[in-house]
Length: 85
Image (cartoon, one colour):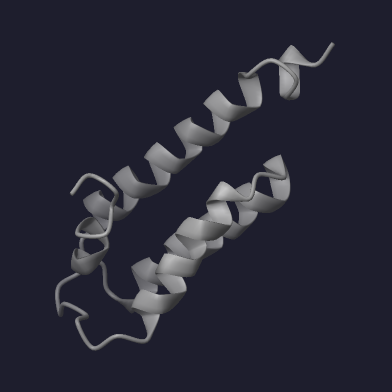
């Protein structure tokens, strides 16, 4: 329920592309494969017919913000980013 699968249903096509782009950028920047899993979900949802008419920019911002915070946390872990020996 809390994996984001339901939250992506309120995003329109442009917002799903924004989410996909953010995931790919984080995956390339941080070299973390977990963002590719989220990107795969966004790609799948791009081709479904459950796209709402009204955009949800707040949900998009929250989605990207949570992913950025996850990326920052992963970067600060020992052996990564600042924590490198």
